[in-house]
Image (spheres, rainbow, N blue to C red):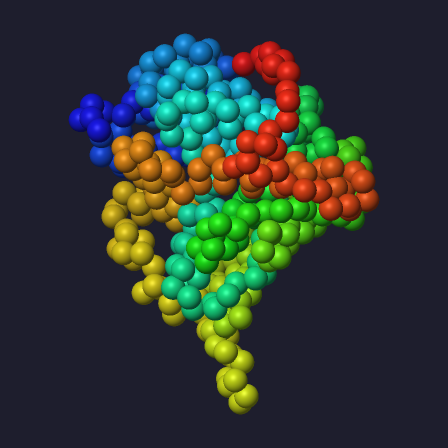
Length: 384
């Protein structure tokens, strides 16, 4: 524990979404921004009053205590590992890795570092998802056994630059088939299940898709369904669609337990709905708005400070970085620790193998079991 300020550097302009939340934390200073594009770097740093500016990531990590890794997906592991090896805390954008080999390398670095690694899965920090987790923790759903998550976000314009070039998303999100962006949909149901049984984990996944109709340039199916089976036999269904012509629906969730059910709203601005009961004969089964249960939220969420209200994602960005900073200072594991990050990421990676082989069941590695670690060659160099 130290009274020195925690100096944070942000790698990638996408990480500026966390800036307000970081600056709201006592004793935290955002001192550096790194971006390979000099014009972007100078413009964003000047606009947001960030004093140190770097085009080389290796130079920035020597000047900070913690790094927000918000670079393109294929750089998440190389950038996180460099920081961890240098003894710097890491808050990484999602997903954690782009291959199973990268997952194991990231685990090695995190375990050897003695510092904090957290994955920035901000959908775990929406108010409704936090409330459902608390209701599960308090036993109001009985035994939970089925969950759903959907991420329907038509982003075909993101796959090319204005000049027609290919972006990183062209290769890493729609350049392969399967659930290539799983953690937004999977994270909240996984946390709900963990609130009931923290020992449960993902065992296997199957994945099937609809084929390619909307944008046949890419091998990515319009819609894919990933079914995740837990060791306990519980199920989570995840739908991903980044192609279909439709309005966005990036945060639909559902949960079923022996004594209750929850369904998020499919209409913007409307609350989710919930029913709690025991299926007694003659019992009314009318849905109620989830907002009727707001008193079950943790105190910090029921009475958020002004800084939280000013942060993005309905205050979720504030609570996410607060948890990261608290984990650094306490030495306790963060809510989305290295094991959760790898498990949720690996589900999507295994889905790619499943869909390629006609929807066969693929076992998800248990990253807590050293015996499952494969023998690997050193990672090839990656241009940073």
